[in-house]
Amino acid sequence: MTENEKMQYIIEGLLPQIKATIIRKDNTTLNKLRKNAEKVERGIRVPGSQDPFLGIEIRERLENNEKSVQSLSDDLRKILLKMDQTNETIQEIKRTNNRSSRQD
Image 1 (cartoon, rainbow, N blue to C red):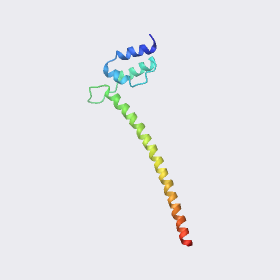
Image 2 (image 1 turned 60 degrees about the vertical axis):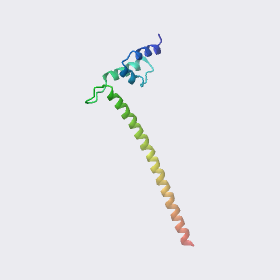
Image 3 (image 1 turned 180 degrees about the vertical axis):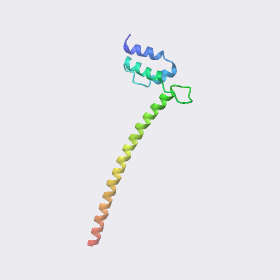
């Protein structure tokens, strides 16, 4: 049995709740699959929840949201920098036009 076949066999034998979380992970080796399964098995309980896997899903969503917020923040910085540059250009054009009109 190949390593890939072993991993598929193991994944197919998991409880549906565990399997749903595991298949979204990087399971390219048996060792990674084992580590991912251990993380899920430990789980993170959300207070008041009966679902130990809910915490894992929430953590993953938060991590993805943090990446999205960081990306948006970077984009916003670029936009603000461009706006500052544009404003400086506009001010320079106004100064040039004012000088030209005074000379006339």
